Amino acid sequence: MGRPPCCDKEGVKKGPWTPEEDILLVSYIQEHGPGNWRAVPTNTGLLRCSKSCRLRWTNYLRPGIRRGNFTDHEEKMIIHLQALLGNRWAAIASYLPQRTDNDIKNYWNTHLKKKLNKIQSGAEGHSKDGFSSPSQSITRGQWERRLQTDIHMAKQALSEALSPEKLISNSGLSELKPSTGCLSNTQPAAQSSTYASSTENIARLLKGWVRNSPKSARSNSAITQNSLNNMSGTDSVSSEGTPSKANNEIEQSETFESLFGFESFDSSHSDTSQSMSPEASLFQDESKPLPLSLLENWLFDEGASQGKEFLSDFSLDDNANFF
DNA sequence: AACCTCGACAACCGCCCGTCC
DNA sequence: GGGACGGGCGGTTGTCGAGGT
Image (cartoon, rainbow, N blue to C red; front, side, top):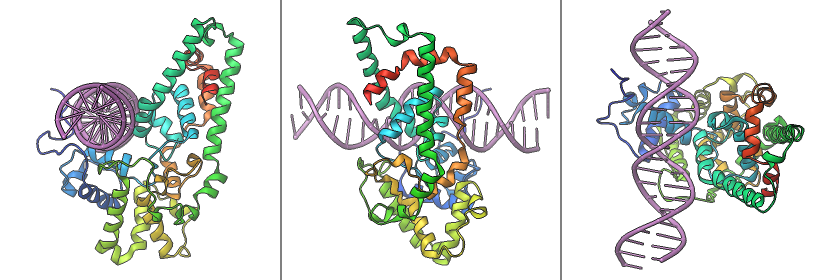
């Protein structure tokens, strides 16, 4: 007997999620927190598979997700991390807390793969013209130096992206300023007309839902705090850096709105991978990235051969020229 | 205007792993 | 110890819109 499917095939809805379904899901998670996905469809009345609910939440509804165009910085990080980690999208995503693994995977498959192929074919063209490919001509010493340089670059990029100073300086309430924030109704650069990809629709709907829901009328701030704790899957907010009662209800309300307003939709932020919204920082604990030093160790201790493959696949020089 | 092709991305599927009983 | 289950992950497919013919 094979493993039973995670959900009955009959009576399970498939395809794009509707706003109503999103609201049902979000409201449930607000009350109970993410997890126990098996129970979600039955408790919410959603005609969806539990996996589908989890996916919808983690990839699109979860607070702190940045969508829209990838910055050059993010692009570089993805390329470097892909070279280091391979197609371990979840691991790569842990270094880009605002991006989901699915998003990164899609971006890789649709954009970066092609770009790198172009580069590679370009390099091959060179070799045909008399230039030997780097992987063929490079000595081991050169290769190691390049590898170290590459790791250093990746490390630098990561530390820039994840440095606490930047997090603090960039994650402050300035993110909520109308000029750049969620309340400004800024249009995403690439907005699709379909609901599923119209994150602003979700935001608007959810905002409306929060305002109209009886619970929000009862105690908006309480919900906000609870939902933050629940949604983040941690109780981290309360211990250190606790939003004290000095953080008044308005601020918390703004924070909540920002959860679904996603200022980061605004792709006009120049180097947004370096900024992190407060909500995003909440989720950092959820998936702590492996320290890069460990990656280095792994790479040098066990993966020298893999490193060579990497270099032959992905030439630094080509890459440098490309960027 | 109708049809076709291609690209982008949301969602699904199946496998695997960790946890619990 | 091992089976069942829930959840995570990566690969793949489906859908839809844009652009081209």
